[in-house]
Structure formats: C-alpha cells, structure tokens
Image 1 (spheres, rainbow, N blue to C red):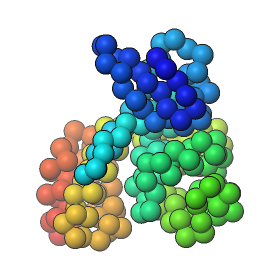
Image 2 (image 1 turned 90 degrees about the vertical axis):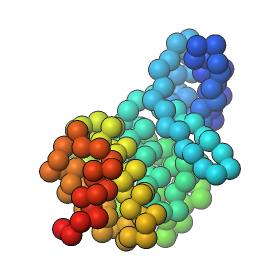
Image 3 (image 1 turned 60 degrees about the vertical axis):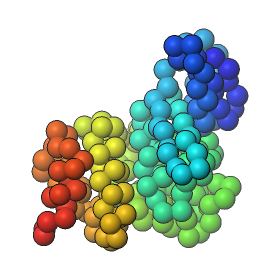
Image 4 (image 1 turned 120 degrees about the horizontal axis):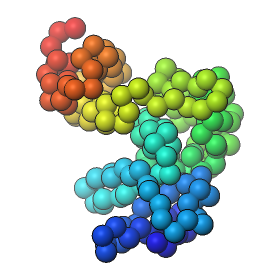
Length: 187
C-alpha cells in the first residue's frame, strides 16, 4: 500500500487501486500495513473515480454531501478534510453557515444548500453522526432512485420526500426499480 494525504493506492489481489481519501482517513490509516477502506465509485462520462473512507460513517456523510447540488466528490472530500465529522454534523444541525464557509471553495450559497438539504437527514446526538439504521445499502438505493427520478425531469425535493416515505414503509428489502415505480404513482 502506498499512501499520501490525498490518496491511497491499495493492493487488492495484486491490482493497485487509487482511492482518493480525506485527511481524516489518512490520519487513521497512515501507519497501518493492512487497511480496510469503505469505497464509493463515482462514474461519470469522462472518469471513474474511487473514494476511500476509513469508516462507514464518513462514507455515508460523503454520500450525503455529494447529493447536494453543487457539491461534487472533490468538494465533499475537502469538506471532510477541513472539518471533523462531529463538527460538520453539528454545524449543519445548528445551521452554522459561517463554519461551512471557512472551507476552501464553499461560499454562502453552497453552505446554505448543504444545510437546507442535509439538516433533516443528518442526526447528531452530540457524540457522533448517525448512520441510517439499515446501513449503506438503503442509502445507496435512495440515491439511485432519486437520481433516476430526477433524470426523468421530476422535482428532486418532491422525489426525495416520496422515496424516503417509500423506503420507510417498505424497508431495505425493496429494489431500486420498485422504489421508482412506487414514486411515479400518485402519492
């Protein structure tokens, strides 16, 4: 394994994968010879980018950040590298725009969008940010369903509410296709 404050090249079965990481992850894994990274693969037309996280909570927070319009993977990593997870969750819950604006590349509009979009999604109990009860699988289904519905031209905020209601009612066993079908039906 080769590690740098911005990335880690992890040997997995003889193949080296470059994963972009936050400074928090770097601090946790830099002296270890064997690590387990929770990964997120972002697929775009022009690139496939792998992001790695030392724990599931940081990955979940990353996924929530990139769900905000105007916040990409690199910006989310900068946020996670600049602010501790607990402080970020507390800033979002207390609507502290100034704390978010201190992050390089985050202006008042983006900080406001982050707070508006994530305030109800991120729970902070004073100890640590919470991960959704069903784990990341349901979070990934949620993101995929909302993305698909938004690509169909439906209002994102309305679709987020519908998808959340469906997942709460149906549970983690429902497929993404079923979530989309139910969301397209009248509420």
